[in-house]
Length: 358
Image (tube, rainbow, N blue to C red; front, side, top):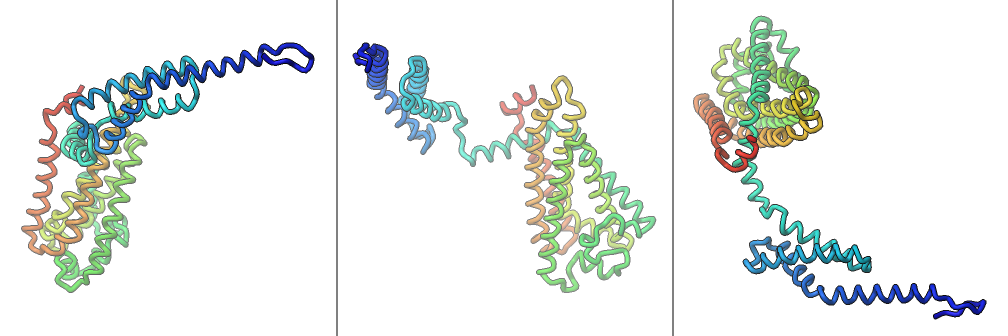
């Protein structure tokens, strides 16, 4: 009880002090009754964070789940009776950590990568028949148009092919020079070949990124860019064919081009999935359709990136080391069989596949 300066008794201050003391005692009693369980849960969570739940025994996993439920109940009570903020903050942190240990996927990076390669990407490809048809159609139509135009009029080559990509391989070049660029039998230095391979990889990576990201605009830019890459391909093939080197350039393109060109078409398919979600959302809103299609579209983009890396390795090494056109064709189309076998057969009949089909 406090006495004010005017002589009156200040009962409010005494009541406040009493309430604070009562809350402090209640908080201390609450902590004392349950703190042992919290410490046990904290220890189990810490061990699981370091080594995963596999590091815990059966009884410890059961205690972890039970401790998480008890901690959630304690947090709810602490909030209702307005215990001290430090205790509430501790319980919130403990419950959040325990939630991640109990409910978050307990899978290593290696496991996630294996699941992506063995299930996620192949299943996404098989669900993308129409977008893949669009991507490969754009590439094939472009190649056919580029070949036809340059066969009839070689000057079209300069319209379709950038000078830095042509690298002196033009319709004006002699057959001997063009042959030397295929087989490297004229002493082309390795530094120049390595620089050109790096340029091609950079160029194709940029194209793939553009094709994929621009697909959201109703797929049209993706289709046009893929068609344009087909024009370049057709123009190159026509130029060599006019010099009697059709088989040779087919082999030269096959060893890395089967993988590289497929990557471009697959990137177009990923962009087409985004574009079709905007153009034909179905029963969903466009935002929901875009979010739904993005899961498979991103997997197609990852596949395209992986294929570009493989193509770059083949282009930088095998294409220079293997000069026989027969073996170039075998390696290139053998890689094509490998990609098709993986993408068509992997991940069939799994639970993930059945759930995605619903």
